[in-house]
Image (cartoon, rainbow, N blue to C red; front, side):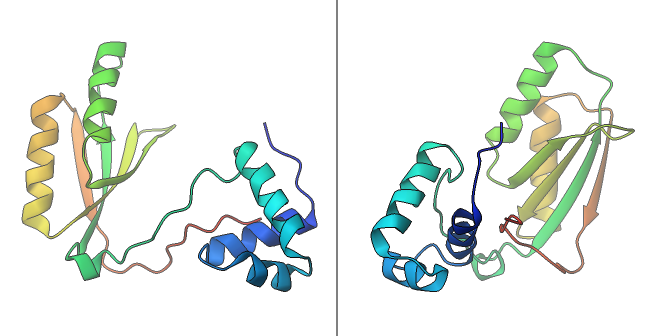
Amino acid sequence: MAVRLDDMDRKILAELQADAEQSLDEIARKVGSSKTPVWNRIRRMKEAGVITRQIAILDPEALGLEACFFVLIRTSEHEADWQRRFLKALRERPEVLEAHRLAGDIDYILKVRVKNARAYDTFYQALISEVRIYNVTALLSMEEIKATTMLPV
């Protein structure tokens, strides 16, 4: 269920998404308010689950993780036990940045970040050793054109 947010809440959220390290004073100045009301609104949005956590965003290439693969998975298995094992395998793999269950011909899409093609193959071999998969297609991203964590508020 969506939480009711007003324009001030949205301005605060936009500022936090742009840079969560800003001080309350900076955010308040930018949104045209004072420190205490901004702090109260942030606290309320945390309690309501709008703000789930604050994190540091790292540069994958600076960490040597230069290869980004989008992995398309088709399965012939749809039993609860298979799905439980598959989801467990994905959650345990730090290389998997995102995993989505899809409608259509492809059952799942994964975003996988690794050092190189050899590291992807190691990931792939480990995954298929844990769960049976009907078909896997790995697509190497040649260029990241846009990547953001900022939601349109």
